[in-house]
Length: 358
Image (cartoon, rainbow, N blue to C red; front, side, top):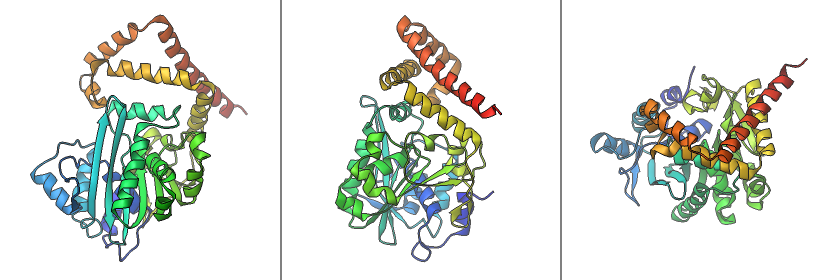
């Protein structure tokens, strides 16, 4: 089945000759995940082709986050459509004290626009913890940085703006657009949320969100989980993926035909998971969720590792430490952890029963 790699082989025509489309958006949103660390100077603008040459010759201090990126990078560098696009203002920050993971890059397009791409959740434990904080916080640190980044880029480039991202990056794209100034909002022509979570009611009801909602388009696979979390009010396209379950979140599995995604319908399992999580968020108060998440990540981070890969590399040894950390929790905290988790399981079971009843 065709995906973005097939699209790149088929549509190797410069953007001025064939206009920007939704598949181009997905490809540029993936650029925010690339290991550009140390390859682009602060105010430098270089082509994707030149950046790949540097990557090959001098290397990078960043990490490859997904094996398909290794193949996508040279394909983009050597294509007519993407190779000569300029990239600039790459930023990648992981702040353990602020519990923040934020990364973004700006792509200068030859149709007199820019595309601001926000990175989604990477493999860092801090990144995932910040994501879960969205279940009870109106604002997380990376959203603050996303607004500041968009404001800075808008002042630097006097061009119309496309904003996008995948996963948490899609959420950041919408949030930054909603809470930037009206002047910046007027420059934005499209906002792409590629399977990113929604928002708390405070954001949905804000004037800024209402100002930009007509420009937002969300794309989710047919068994979407991440992209259905919290509240959404925007236009949504459901698309086909070759993966199953939560693995459909992988944008490399999204199917395309020509310059569009192949559309599909939501699966029953997506509906079930969405209903279960939504009900859990209603029935478990925000303070209990915060304690649960803080304790969970305290346990996971008992080995002082940075990424989930580090836990997995020595799983047996790390599992023993994690279990010991849990066993050392006080009685009341253990009770709360079990109670919160059991509530999620109970809601899931109840929803399954409702679906199978005649």
